[in-house]
Image 1: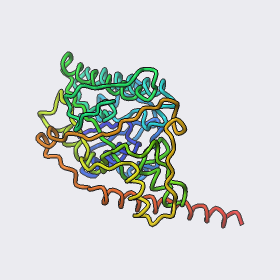
Image 2: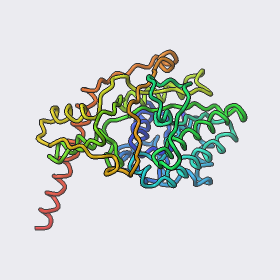
Image 3: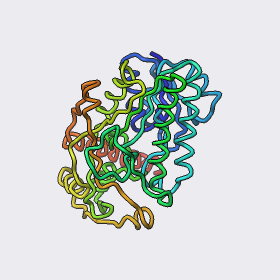
Image 4: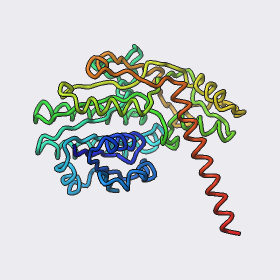
Length: 336
């Protein structure tokens, strides 16, 4: 098939592109590199069935050509990371909503199939777990910028389902729960790569709040497998699906586990939310998905447990740090 991935140079998008290229699909990637990196797709550039464009999804002329040539569109382009969202709420909403509008408007012309990636953030301040796809969404006050991301992604979902109901564009929405793995950066507040990097470099391991907030982490390989299966399943059109794990751990426990697995001497330090983000910052204490629907539809079950996930990520960052040290050493040799 001919596949278009928006945000395809990002963490999840690059793994999705890799999987589709390997199975023989023709894959086109568009990414403005605001949070993605060409480094993530460097290894795919020589492949004859892969091409990429450094451009925004709001470039309608280019997007019109790419959408027209595609059989399936995976729309992953979005603002990501709590830090970026808190610091740039305007950019967050404009990126998420306008980008999705462009994709759906163009897909509607020839009824192209679109998978929209959403997030567990849309469940907002719900406290009753596990979160089910038809649960009510409970968002915080508009004066808390942290909720702008959840709101914008919820609007994306409404748009996707409206285009299916009103214009018969075959759409499916996927809510991702804390997807992690190799290539993910901690630059925008992603907790596991941040903690792993801190542990490996002997820096303070920073845990925000009191560390009691709990999360379930999904390996990117499991997430990508589910994304492809949901995009290609004939009965998923007009539906919303959770993708995640049900192995829950508090962030403080996670920090201790990473410290032990890396053999690090780094101290674990609690940082108040207002110091890390902004005054009055609100967090979700639990994000536990109900996976009944996705399991029933595509037989989804996570294949990576948390220990295996952390082993994979630690190995990746150890290699990345070694490469950085080697490059620095080479620079010094050339300077001499």
